[in-house]
Amino acid sequence: MTRILAYRFSAFGDVAMTVPVFREFLEQNPDVEIVMVSRSNFESLFSDIQNVKFKGVNLDDYKGFFGLRRLANELQREFQPDFIANLHDVIRTKILDKIYKRRRLKVFKINKGKEEKEQLTDVWNLNKKQLKLTIERYADVFRSMGFKVELSHQLRPSSKAKSGIGFAPFAQHKGKMMPLEKSFELVKILAQKHKIYFFGGGSKETETLQTWESQIPNTESLAGKLSLSEELKKISELELMISMDSANMHLASVVGTRCVSVWGSTDPLAGFLGFGQRENDVVRVSDLSCRPCSVFGDKQCYRGDWACLEELKVMRIVEKI
Image (cartoon, rainbow, N blue to C red; front, side):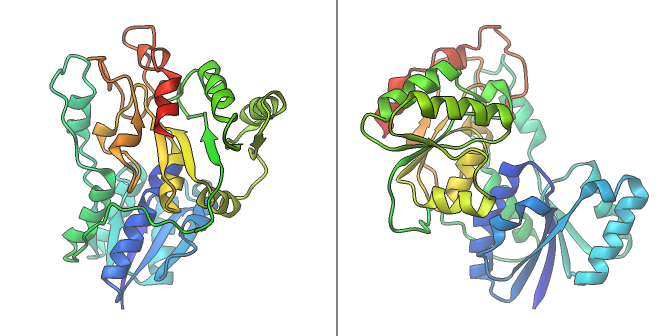
C-alpha cells in the first residue's frame, strides 16, 4: 500500500475542507493510505474515513528549525511515507519540505494561488473572476503525484433523520460576520416556524447565545456544550445550517448538510465555498464593486462603513430557507 504523509496545521475550516477530498480520493484509490498530521483537536473530522490515520501534534513542542527537524524525524520513523503532501505551504511546512527533499523523499505542495487572490481582492479590480476551488487545489496535490481523482462536488448526508435549523452567527474576523442585531432579527423570524440551534465557541459567544436562547422561544444554544464529534453528529441531523464564511460551513459539508452561507468582505470567488454547497445558497451584497476586498476577512473596510455587511437584508436569508 502506498502511504502519503499529509500536513495542514490550521485553520480549522481549511483542515475541514480536506475531509471530503480525502474521502473521495481514497475511494478512487483504495490502495493508498493517508497519514494526516494536524492539531490534535481536529482528529474527529477524520474518524469515519477508511485508510486515514490521524497524527495529532502540539506545535509548541516543535519550535524552531531544530524542533521541526525532530518532528520530521519522528514522522518519518513512525510512518515511512512514500510521498509528502504539503497542504498548507507556510514557513513551518516549507521547512519540513526541505528536510524531506534532502532525504530524497517525493514532496508535493498546494498551489494556493496567492497572486490570483491578491488581484481578486484589489478594490480597483472591476473584473472579478472565479478562482479555482480550494478543494480542487487539494486534489491537485494528489494528481501531481500521478493519482487520478475526480471530485463529485455533491453533498453526502450522513444522517437520514433531519430536523431543525443550525445557526452559527460568529466568525473569526469582523469582515466575515453579519452585525449581531441582524442575526438576532433573523432568528426571531425563523424561530416562529423552526427550532433553531445555536453554534459557537468561546466565553463571549457562549454568553451571547445563552442570552438569545432566553429571549427567543423555540431556540437552544449548544455553544460550549458539545465535543467536536458531538457537534458533527448534531449538524448531520439538521435540515439546514446557516453560517458565515466560517468553519461551520465546512463542518456542514463534512456531514453532508446543506448550508446557507453569508459573505461580507470575502466571497466564494476566492474558492472557499464549502464542498458540495450551492452557489444559490450564498447570500452577499453583490452590487458593491469593492468586494471582495479580503481573502480571509481580516482587513479593515476600505470604505469605512462595512457596507458589505450593513446592507445585507435579513429577508434574503429567510427566502433561501
